[in-house]
Length: 500
Image (cartoon, rainbow, N blue to C red; front, side, top):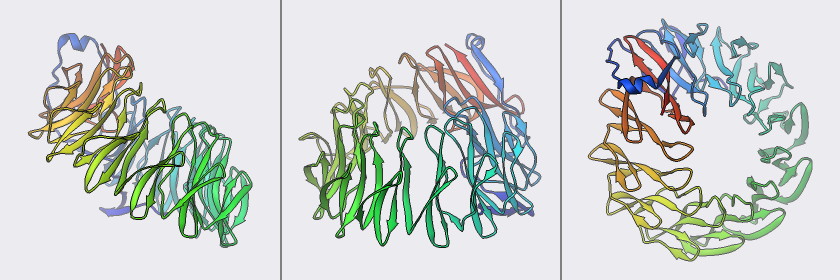
């Protein structure tokens, strides 16, 4: 329950692993094309303290126009939000600060005087012996976290503490409509489902707690008299030796889970039991909810089962996915250390390795990175591109007419768009297409400067640092923004807006 802390100069300091950035006093010239400058707006997000360290930077994704982080100054830690440094504390918890998914609220967990508490929107919560798992509701209206009170635990929602238990077993979470929160708790060896303020139980065990996508149904597996049953808003089903991988279909009309009987596993789909196997994997529904697939083990081999029908047998089954229109299904089959992409009854040529399978938005195109002959290339609609030292997952434009991916050759990184290689850089980050698919933008490191690359045009705004958590974002087909740090001459966090 307690957060990971270390002693630093006599102070408790929380180690944040998301990112670490150092600011020195070395400056770099701000170089911009005059015409480009006329179309760029700079919004200051504040200046970090000189020679300070930044821990755990975070942004209000997907807008990505705000920035929060932790700095240490003279052994004291503080959270800075859009350039405004908050109160000094002994420690800030790993994984915080964080923005709410909506409403741009900011929260974090503080360590002070051997106590812990949350700060949300600048307001301090009550102090406890331990605090963890701070989370906002999807609509940003509420927040929830787990607290330690001596040897007992409880859950706090919007400053209001709930019933105290011996232990809160799960991370508390909200339904997608933000109207409900749930968690699993134990007291005196009795297990309970806690939904909002209602305690449901007791049971001998509870696990796999999940809401349906429409938030109307809460399900989990409960243990009663040595057997596991599916619990659905008070109703329990058949008894099994075990239950796992509870999964709702996208339309919420089907509910599948893996059950164990006689030491074999079987898929249960809306109470209909499939054939039992020595082991099976997680169920996957098609986007239209019409199909259900999962890998199943036959003897020492594996086969993909789709709508109860077994496919070809392989040594192993790899990545698998449906197309967005649900009409196509592909998966990776591995046999004698050779990899194949399987679609229906057809298999691709063999490869030494195959990466993530990616369909275009219109479902007409399929791309995936492969390794062959010790080198890597991208396969698009069955056709191999050029070979490189490394290739990464592809990105399609929204109209499916363009595909781009990052590649490495001679230790330099570049984008390959529709088989055409772009300019090489020291490092490049993930690409992004505009909504109308006409503009491609990404960040690239050239020497000590981070450039904006927009339709192959380099734009140098004097950025010396960028954050992986804050990519370039299109506000419209003709406008995009991104966060970077300039030195002019002191470090300053800036949100740049560019009108194309």
